[in-house]
Amino acid sequence: WSTDKQFNAKTSALLFANLGSLTFDFVARQKVGGVNFSFYYFKQLPTIAPASYSSVDHDFIVPRILELTYTAYDMSGWAEDLGFEGQPFAFDPDRRAVLRAELDAYYARLYGLTRDELRYILDPADVMGDEYPSETFRVLKDREKREFDGEYRTQRQVLDAWDKLECGALR
Image (cartoon, rainbow, N blue to C red):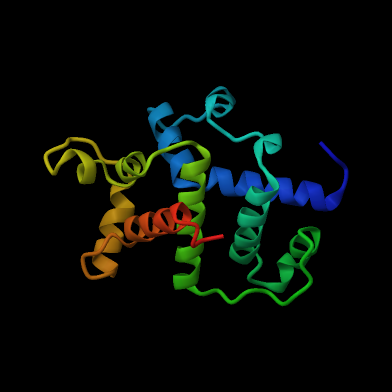
């Protein structure tokens, strides 16, 4: 670990993105059966080590985390630590959903998942059939179906981002 502020802020941004990814959330839900989450469980979760990230990973993840987190002037110190000196980003829910979807697709790739494995994480019934007894993000799916005229928006956006990453259209 370095004492360089920018290095530590960028490393923190990578950790923040990792912990907020749907893939990480999925694994955590499988690991923890109850409401107790001890440090013992946390140590077993698949957090990507800072040294494992390439400069390409940094260039993809850090700007998106910056835009998601720097939405008010009280976060200007954080933005400066990340090397950004501009105005806070507008809090746009639609833009934020796209950024999160891009990060989720990117982290699924970092974890080495296939598109079908990512589809399973998002909605097991989508892969296994409607009668499959498992579900992962039911509350999210149900809320989005109510809010977006029957569409599970996160699933569509994450898979769209995955497809763009696969063909090189998203950097």
